[in-house]
Length: 507
Image (cartoon, rainbow, N blue to C red; front, side, top):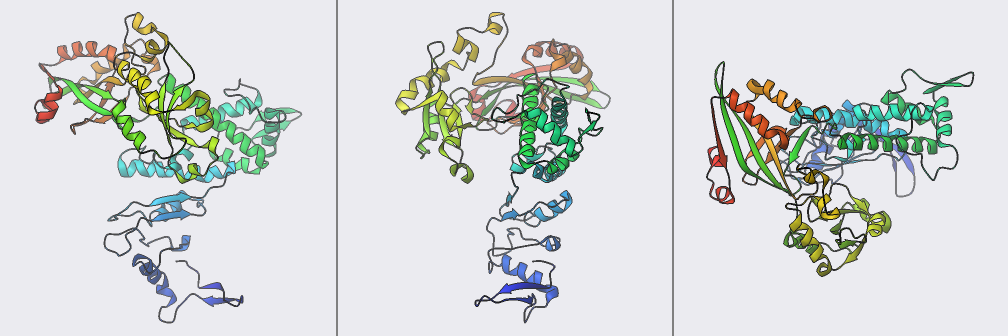
């Protein structure tokens, strides 16, 4: 499907000739429509569309057509315009479809090529916010990782540029395998593309040096090796900045989902306050939720039984801490690209007894440095010991024998498989000023962000609200008692959730 009138065809005899695209019984004006019908009716398995034909044609796996197989949409070259890209993607992802399409984007390893992907990814995330009410709606797609034109990306770019000039101490070290003066070579290359200016042997940053679009555009003019090295240094800096933001509690995660990745979520208690406002009464609630994220020996054995690879299975740590070893289950990341990698570069998903599936994957070269492969019988004792202890003992106490926070009378939930959260829900606008006062009274209020969470309990109740730190729940409850005219508390047990009684049934 294209806007061209003719095409070049090579015959069986090797002769090449130009011929019209029109057919005997199909005119050129309706040929694209006819080709679309052939694809949708399963007469043809592959549809090749050009940008000229990417508007107004529906190629999704529609329930009303014969060809309802999942569409695999391969984009050979990302367009310059994000609007055009979305227009193309929309050909195969439309309403009334049986299956959502799989998108494949062909992007070279050239660092400057990230420019196009970054623009499209940013626009796709905006589209996700409009269509799903969640700006992270496309986060599970691979393309979203290309969106570097955000707050943290600009911070990383500014830090990278100032490091190259010697204004700041490097956040991450230069590559160890680079032969030569990395910072000096990059600085000279940036002079050549106009991001750094040089006058009378004095280097200065251009006034628009921290513009992401300009950075990605200009580095295309650098030598390929330096271009890729600079971009890798930039992404390493970005990763370090995000990691630091997460450690200090300042990372903006948007809405935090509890009870994902197989975690069990259960309400244990609900405290309700009823207060008066201008138009009547309003309920404000604090739900105490228990999240179980660990994996018992019986549960992990089920996952182990599904594994087939030679490198997959149980591993035990070489390191011994507090007379204990770590047991993990390693499963090969299932993508086709990962299976084709060399043995040492293959990525594995790790499962731990106390925290379940880990978000960070481990390559095999690192895995074998830390662990040795063992039989299930050898791993069972270590697995069950940590699983049992992690219900009430934090990682510090388990691995080191004691925890400074616990010794000083505070709670520590690091490494616990059972974690307790307190979520403020209901109509909170009329008491929001009091809530803010309580949250700001925390000694760590300046370094933490107010976190919105959503969760779905094991018995199907959905909650969205603000996370209240454990140490502030008592203070907030006292304030709410003063503000409201009525209050009551309900506690839920396993029996309550099984027979449908209590607050769950009422809601």
